[in-house]
Image (cartoon, rainbow, N blue to C red; front, side, top):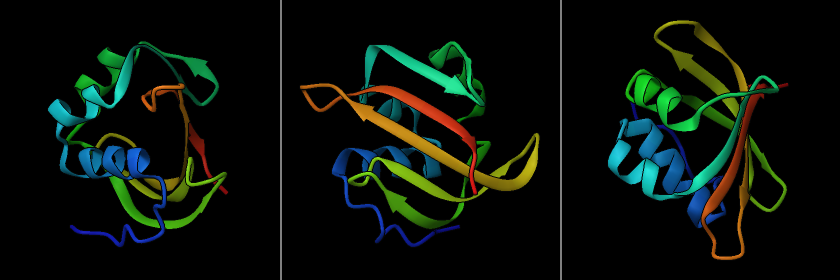
Length: 108
């Protein structure tokens, strides 16, 4: 299901969301640094293991708002395991423009 990505103003975040939506691990993993820090509901989780399991099974249903220069994405989310809920993805970029941190958690 295609969603409106027009609110995504940061090119790297948009590329990550497009890869997430399509379950494209090949593109997804190249957007992140090799030592990316990842938190799920404030718990540090091993990034590669988590997304190898969830890519293709989790996606945004809609994007409600984008904040912090396009790095924070809020919306409705679908997980095959957990159902539908509000979520927030908070991306951080390193000086080379790669994503070096991702925090995901319940959105408001």
